Each structure stands twice: as structure tokens, then as C-alpha cells.
Image 1 (spheres, helix red, strand yellow):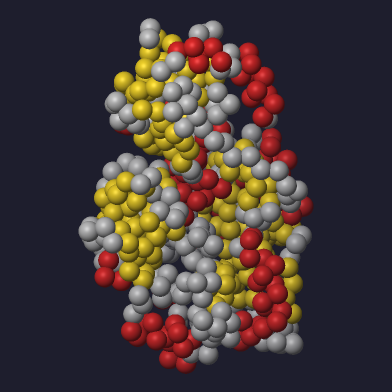
Image 2 (image 1 turned 90 degrees about the horizontal axis):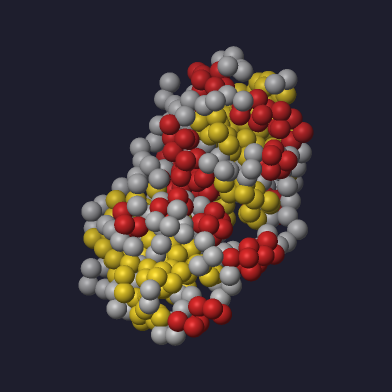
Length: 372
Length: 125
């Protein structure tokens, strides 16, 4: 047995003492000390989120405000998403791209009348800030909202639970935001998440977060959920993890994220890497991100080599593990285009042995977003 | 349960006649979390002391199980394949991994006893 050990000065979120009081096992993640699981364990936390509701502390993520000038137009120049048509209090999943069409980060952008509110990956915060400050132009400023916490309440019971504290939240549309009050604290609530379930993300002052978290956790439907289950939930939902499934060497088309590119942007271009991305959109790519189901029981972890049935290398696993709701191993990875169709047999080279698997459509578990 | 010996890699071993029964400790299973997959060696396979003998996987990660003693694998706990959660539920009982015929049974006495292992784990915390 080799058990991992780490020791480095880590940042803490405002829920740190609450995590400890709840018996969390804390680990280092993106420079933060974060709960990987609570005493109920990853499997139970995962299944509970799919059947009832889970509360996640995602305060390590970067919360950014873009203001001044025309922030929507300024950000649109750096992403392939259609932001100009985004109505106030609507949000969009989009990608910061480099000049080769590689993905610098994936993010959620919420539109306000004259501002944008972004949630970016924890590990990309500093890089994104530098990129945005260089590229947005003089009149638009970027502010990292370091005094804010972010909670996610996810699962089929999330809307009922939150409705008990907040009028009108049950009818909030998917990918829509609402400014409201929870436990006396001003919050920005969005109907979004990273589990494939219905749910909400709640941005609020860090100092107010413990009281709101405790209020939600007092409801029997709501369990605290750690990063372990967050990862297995998003993998079952077919959602990308930055630095693993997408990075600067993968384009949106290779990553099967073409759906994030609006029709107007396809026609007009005008985003970094547009030449590469639009050519790939028209002509196809050499490789593609796909879902993979091992036929046996052995999980195939990140970096597992993928071969075709005659043994030629055709790709690599970028996320892989066990899907608790699937009850078996699942993975995502990039394979060469001829092997990307659902049903294609593959072999996964786990510990030197080729193990049969096949390509499946994503997500592994049907998403259950709120559709009104 | 004084018949157990332990490794610094958190395996336990117990002598059963001329065989050695091997598993992972309660501390190891608690650190791993929910075990979802166990890969066992072939019967007849030789294992070297401190080298990989089996693999145990939680939702998050795969870990090697090292052989506490050198020898030949004579039996594996096949029930773990269908029910890997036994490793969590009963790590030093029904959650055993394998039995081996040790090359040199006296190596057993060189491993940590229960008290020494308990102190070793305390130091790890």
C-alpha cells in the first residue's frame, strides 16, 4: 500500500472549521485545503447527491467581476461563445482560447446590465487574471472577488430545499441568475452546477457562507459532499475537468465542445484560434473526446493508453474511475477519429494488460437539468 | 489478535499452518475509502517481499498491495472480485487478499507486531 502524503502551506475557505466539525478528510487541491470526503464516504455522497441533495464548498474557484467599457464585447473577443445575445441575468458556459484554438480555461459567465460575473477554475485563477488584464483592453477592468465564497447545492431535492428559504427560486430557469437573500445574507444564486443534476450555485460573502451552509445542512435531505464525489458526479455527467480532459493543447472541437460555439461566432469568427477552430468544425479533427466503458470491472485511470483491437495505439484516457450510479468503471479520453463512434471496440492498457472496452455516448448518466 | 504482523506499507500478515494470509490494515482501508475493485494475482505466481502482489482501487485512485513476505501465491480471495466492499467492512477478516507459501517463514518475525504497528500509524498521523 502506498498512501499519499502532502505538506505545504494551503489556503482555507471560510467553511474550513465547518468541514472539520463535519469530520471531513481534508486534502490539498489547487492550493487549498479542501474536503475530499466526509465520514459517509465518496460512494454514499455520490449516490445521495443523485437521489436527494448535496452541498459542496467550491469557494476555491475564482470569482471575477468584469466592469467598465463594454465588458461583454471585450470578453467575447477572447471566447467562442455568443455573449452579445446573452440577456441580463442569463449565464453561459464558455472557453478562453489561445491563438492556436487551445483551451486556456473553461468558465461560467453571467451577464448583468453593465458587468459580467465569471467563475473560473481554482488552478487557473492567476493565469486567467493575467490573460484577461492583458487582453480585455483598457476600459474593462477585472477584479478577483477574494472576499466571496461559492456553495453548490445539487440534486433532485435542491429546488425544494432552497425554496424553503427563498421565494421564487423553484421557477428560476436553468442557466439563469437571481439576486436574493438567504439567512439574511445577500446572495447571487444561479441554476447551474457540475453534477448533471438540477441544482444551484450560491455566491455570497465568505463571512456569510458558514451560516448559510449550516442552514442548508440542517435539512435532512442535504448532506455535505466532498471533492471525491464531485469528481465522480461530473465524470458520469460527461463534464470536462480542466487540466485533465481539456487544456491548452486541446481545441473545443477535439473536446466535443462545439456546442459552446454560437452560430453567429461560427459565421463571423473573431475569437482567438478561430482559423483553426472553424476549419476543424468544417473538416473534422484527427482526434475526439469520447466516453469509454471498460467491459470488465477494472477502472482505467487518467493516462491509461488506448489501443484498437489489433493493438495499435489510438489514444489516451484523460479522466477515469468508478461511476457509483453506473456501478462500474467509466472513463473519458481522446481517440483518433476512426475509433470515435459509439460502439467502437477498444483496448485499455491497464497495468500492462489490454482490457476490452468500447466507446459510448456521453453522458454516462442522463442529465436532469431544470427545464421549466 | 496477537498473531498478526504488519508492514510499513499497511499490509497485515498472519500465519495459517505453513501458509501466510495477507490483507490490508484497517488504517489502510480507512485512508483509501470505498473500495470498488480488487485485482488479485494468479495462483502459482511468485511474489517478492515488498513488491506488488495485488491492486486495490477506491473511487478515486488505484493503490498497490505489496507482499509482506516472499513466496508463491496458493490461494486468492475470489469473493472480493464481486464484493470489494468487504475490504472496508472487514479488512483483517473476510477482506483478506491472498494466501502464500512463504520461502522463509522466519521473515514473519521480522515484521512489526500489533503494538509496533499501532505506534507507526500514530507517527503517520
